[in-house]
Amino acid sequence: MPKKVKISVIGIGLMGLQHIKAIQRSKNASLHSIVEIKKTGNELAKKFKVPLYKNIKILLESDKPDAVVVATPNVLHETDTVQFLNSKIPVLLEKPISDNIKSAKKIISSANKNKTSLLIGYHRRHNSIVNKVKKIIEGKKLGRIVSANILCWLYKHKNYFNEKWRISDGGGPLGINLVHDIDMICFLLGPVKYVQAFKSNSIRKYKVEDTASVNLFFKSGALCTLNISDTIASPWSYELTAGENPAYPITDQSSYFIGGTKGSVQFPNLKYWYYQKERSWWNRIHNNKINVQKSNETLINQIDHFSKVVKKKEKPKVTGNDGLNSLIIFDAINKSSKSGKKIKIK
Image (cartoon, rainbow, N blue to C red; front, side):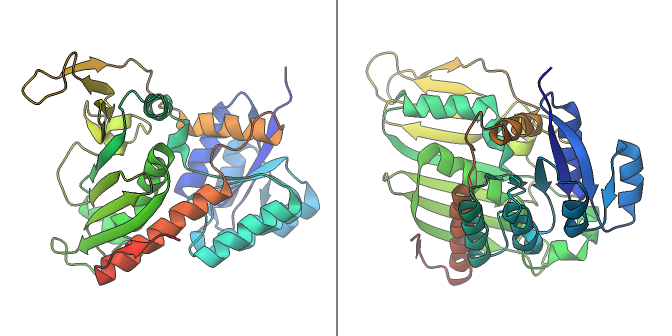
């Protein structure tokens, strides 16, 4: 049996716990330890039967793992991640890469300097459906991509907002839900040239937005509209349509629509739309259901991939530069949503 990669998880919040569960179910990895300063760390260490460390320094001095997952708050990403990279320990860093661009660049610089792998936790890229759509686009089956439409409409229960940070800057759907969609549409359509965005808090009246509309202009000439809200009763969001997370009841709908000169595709309810003969709105348009098994284990797929990267059997699918790119676009979206102006991505 191949030797499993021993992974330590740093920060056991919501995502840290999900990573632990993924490691336990992975055939390529095992849980080495956890690092958590909260009292819950003791209980979790006993539950998962692994050592608990109060901080990263003690872990590195005691028993170095083969690799780590860093799932601490965004403001700590640079401090925590660089410690491991300087020790030449590969890192899977939970998204976003950091809370600011300068910090993100320092993380990437450390990875390059130490020649150590840095992966960013955009786990949707490990879904077979997303990779199938990527192949369809690259195979020119849709022709030249003209436009895309992304819906992220969901309704968050009032109890969700009992956490005060969720009604402050950064706690709205732009900061919480949008980052995955930015990474995925760039993965599918390429680099963005311009961004323009608008936001509103007209429903809940909190300081933070509850709804936003984002326009992306790609270097290819393609356009994309991304509409997001956490106050719409709707079945159209990736979480509810992809079936990746059992916490969300799945709907037989799509939330992504990508159109080209020869055809269009919708997913996660994967359908390809096309004309059999002459392309014209006067003719009947047909569709084929594309059968691809939905990946409801993307976090496990991500851990398996991370383990292979650690063993130098694969190269990172989501790099530090990918994480930086998403952060730059997100920063531009925030700036545009305040000014209403079009922002150029440099």
